Length: 148
Ligand SMILES: [Ca+2]
Image 1 (cartoon, protein in one colour):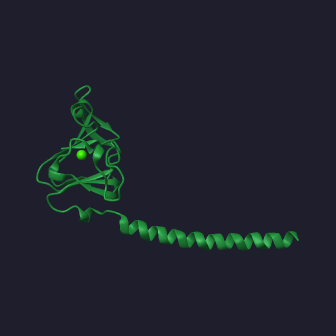
Image 2: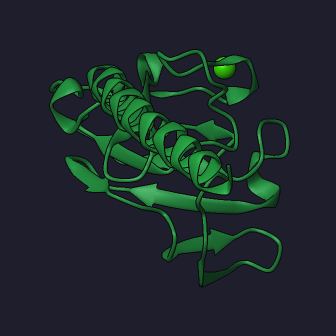
Image 3: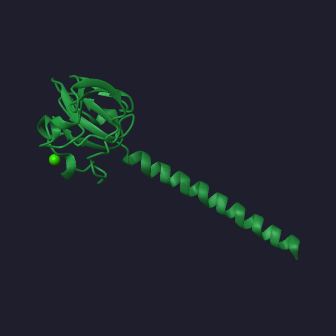
């Protein structure tokens, strides 16, 4: 009796494992096709990415400036504000990411990204802190609320 229960449990376990592997494979395939990539940021565009290394959702800053990212979404539907983890600036001029949206833009952190520059993550970057007017290294991951 005990032996058969163990056998059944093992069989169920094996079936679940097989199912899990199949599901995992499907999930990965789906995720991969929905992931943004660096090549999706064309010449002239400023692109914010939801995930590090230019992955997850992508949002292109229209006209190079958006003073409040609170009403914007990545192409996968997720909110942009406080969710940017990497950036490509393919425009011809510098762009700045701000910790706070207008009208408080110049009351928090400001991160400059030069023309044709990119940052694959924002975990340790030099920002200008308007609170005390000094430059400092901070974790700016998931902090941007405006881009201009
Ligand atoms: Ca906006």
